[in-house]
Image (cartoon, rainbow over all chains, first blue to last red; front, side, top):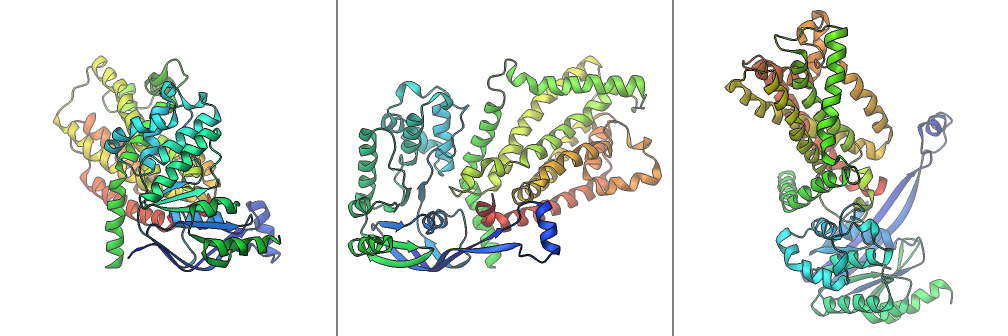
Amino acid sequence: MSNMIEAENLTKKYSLAKQRTFKEFLPALFSGQETKTNLLALSHLNFEIKKGESLGVLGKNGSGKSTLLKIIAGVTKPSDGRITVNGRVAPLIELGAGFHPELTGRENTYLNGSILGLRKKQMDKLYPEIVKFSELEEFMDQPVKFYSSGMYMRLAFSVAVAEKPDILLVDEILAVGDSKFQEKCLRRIKEFQNLGSTLILVTHSPEQIQNYCEKVLVLDKGKQIYFGEAKAGIEKYKETLGI
Amino acid sequence: MNEVQKLINNIKLFFSYRELLFNLARREISQRYKQSILGYAWVILNPLFQLLVLTFVFSTIFRVSSFNVPYAIFLIVGLLPWNFFAQSLSSSVNALTSNSSLITKIYFPREILVYGTIMAKIVDFFYSCLVLILFFIYFKVPLNSQILWVIPIFIIQLIFTAGLSLLISTFNLFYRDIQYLLNLVISLWFYLTPILYPVEQFPEKYRWIFIFNPMSVIINAYRQTVLGGGEPNLNSLGIATVTSILFFIVSFLIFKKSEGKFADYV
């Protein structure tokens, strides 16, 4: 039970329709062309993450990293195999996905909080901290459409990390705002790790993995090349890159 | 047993996200009329103008008979619930597709997106009923306690609307044709529901059409209780209730079954 995440034979197949419209589909059907192609985004992954451990996911573009995050976040289901995820998952996959431009910073904060599954009472308590962290005190009653993209990201990040999650999913987002704010974000992530949160970090950067993760999973074209200690994994990853 | 357990878990999960439902409804309402001068007044102005024109056309040009009340009153009792129905459908058909960025990123019970849209339309509906009250005062329409029937009738309408909304939002996610088809269906459906005319004027040999149209039973029931001051036709209302509930359950199950694929197709 001490495992936060357990994947067993995890497989995700996408079937892509070749013909997107009826006009293309009908002739294809009659002339006996294939109407679907299968894409194996993930094939037979096996790994487990214990409580307090963090996982780095390395791989080239299109190796299935984002698909894996989606499965952990619960937005899509595996086609085969099993995955068990214990605890509250906070995705930092694309910041501000739930923001609405016409609403104010405050309204968006509460809306985004409820999308993350937080109650209003909790949000009332967290709100001052969110505002302080984002450094947007004067702008909270403005519609976010007037925010700069940096401000937008700052607010989104602050909401996402307001409450300690059990599992934090991070997809190459550590380019938030200026370098001072970035450092603050990284510090917050470290704090969560010290408090026992599991971090799942998807990145191209082996340095970040070394700093934040004990375990690493290397993927190539959906196949699991390596799972284990970070150091050895990074070597494997460099091999697949051919360096 | 496993299925029942799953359903209970689903319902529990849904309740833990109930605040999201209210927040989404609030978002929908507050964003809609931002940057417009008249703002929320449009919710009342819209049916008002619709009513003026339709009343002129059908009481002056076509001369439709309307119980024993002014045609405007006859029309509004049917038109407002219909508007609620039609607007719920046309906005929930896109409830999933327009939130694709959420669906592909974060898990929460997806039906909340659909219910949130409908909830915003319920608020619109209640505001638009202010028009109704004004008309009732102006024309001095006598009301009695039978008017309380509108509460159960509204609930039946809501169940049917929710079921249909779940279904079309799911299909529209896979095939965007549905949203265009829906426009057509709604405008034709409007004429095949006794809104502009009383049921009695519909030729008897075609009235079987209404059996397949829960909305006609519902609109008719509103009229019988509000304008007729009597009980609704309990027989047909009972059938509409059972059909609506069954329809909702089937739609809900289809929705839940497809939910896992939403993020892959949206």
